[in-house]
Length: 248
Image 1 (cartoon, rainbow, N blue to C red):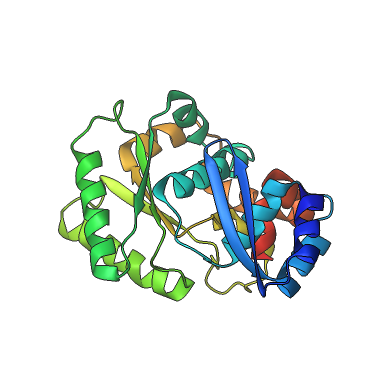
Image 2 (image 1 turned 90 degrees about the horizontal axis):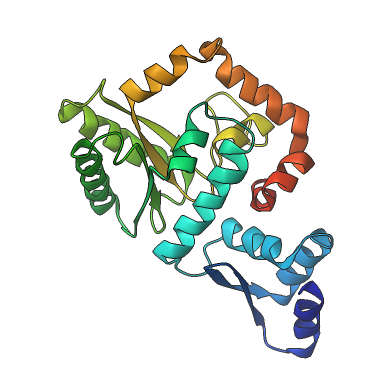
């Protein structure tokens, strides 16, 4: 596939080049300048076409993602990184039991994005743990910049507390540009929370508490995860999930 893309690059004299790559249900088109595409190809000689697709689309939003595309890519991230590297102690059973809800918000402003969050909060509150264990709400059109995402996260947290649900649910956050406070942007420890899209994770606190009771030294999980990032290094993480190359 990369050979075909290179051929198209040289044969097409247009200023922008369309690259479409399909995998399972996921079909993505990206638009790159000739210079950008040459740079990407140079860095991805040993990668497959799907890796190329992910690299470009996760660096910039060249077009609007459909809900199916956003869910598919996020689900692959969960399976490859969150479960594959055991970053979360209770993710694997929920993946196997298919009790994770992948929801999307196409809101283009914060107010509507907050309403979408409240709808998902009401949905999980109205169902049993067996029916719906946890929810990942994926934002495809808003909070693209990390600072804007933190503002949205603060609003969602305040809404959860105002609803009297603090202590029943808690929120975790993920973003392509995620950066821990006081940590350099290029520090590899940030990659524990870097996902394909701005994402808010709605977690049942009771479920989390029960799982952590059977997990040895749960307070060491963050340190363990960061140590794992250091051990794997950039190249090791990219092998697990090639889209992470876009975060370097």
